[in-house]
Image 1 (tube, rainbow, N blue to C red):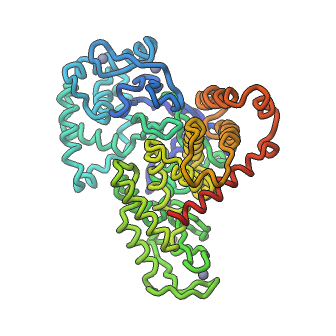
Image 2: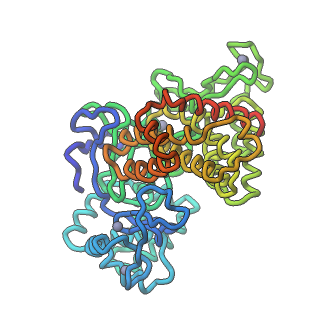
Length: 527
Ligand SMILES: [Zn+2]
Ligand SMILES: [Zn+2]
Ligand SMILES: [Zn+2]
Ligand SMILES: [Zn+2]
């Protein structure tokens, strides 16, 4: 394992290894960057992405994605691995593809799942390098005994058998299964700045970074380079934490997700608060006056989660009808809607269903709009709106996301990368709305100057990108070249010059965005 000099591996008695900072890091600074040891493009993206540098091929409709190349070509032998250039092909050939190409060629046109290819890449590491890699893997957790009792274990065995057979490794099946379990516990997905997941990676030093629901660092990628960045000041000797799960969920659901997927009981500061700190992720509201409650607390000694039930609202005196089971009943209602599991809208019927459920939940007035399960399902409706050119709904949802959800999220700074992805999507939708010219029925009543909104959002995006991706990132360059250019062209030379030399305040950006906010709030009441 090549550990960067900015961090030190430390053994924490009782809970295993972790990474600590070797010096002080200011908020939004880079802790370190490295190329992961192994990575593989996601199956869905395999023919559209360079397997080496992970640049995206700009097909029609994709040209708005960050970090694009004109096209990718396939390896002439296996025809299932794609590259953006000969340099990339050569680099990947030397590093991994030389040993797997023949196998993939035999299997073509079938392509194994990306996890199997990742496992094969590891099994096929040659000579000395292999010894070093395997010994770095040794200390990683597989949770194989926990996994044996899960439904997916059978699939893992089948996948391991495949990888063993294709690679011709002399390792026993049991060892290969254990390796796969280690990969499942310790790998990370690779998101574009737009938050599309384009690949999976595994790295023995990154695996040392532990989870917290209140993390101080975040992982972002620029092409195939991984950056660990501080989201708040980190002092020398302090442990570095990232988050492993959907961090917008309230505490009980986060704990459950971590237990199911990673087999540990989270004891982080947000799950076992020594001093109870308001955490909007856990809020419930009084349906009459809107006062927020924090019904969860934990016993800081045992880590056991307690419900502090609500009987009446301390602000307005409203008596909850189903006390003392208010919190339980609300949680039960949320679970029944199934909204917490919605991450993708697959068809029109599902979109209508999700919208209906969101509406019902919203009418209860006990779950704030900035909280799960509103966040993910609303966000997944946006691509559906784009597909159907439903700008009425798109602007409504984006307005809610921007003003009501991300503002709350931004108190949790680890969301900065997601926030940028959302702003990027906002920009894209506004561009569509402008190009489409014709807006639906209700939007025109608000007389929003969408060009002004768009300009301001691009300026804001440009300002915020360096806090997440560092100075001069490809993402920043992309935003500047693609969007600013388009905008300036649209405006004509006089207006363009005025915009280049003015501030958002003077241009009235905030005023226009406020109109979107008003529209979004009305939209909520109308749905
Ligand atoms: Zn490339
Ligand atoms: Zn090949
Ligand atoms: Zn936690
Ligand atoms: Zn009240």
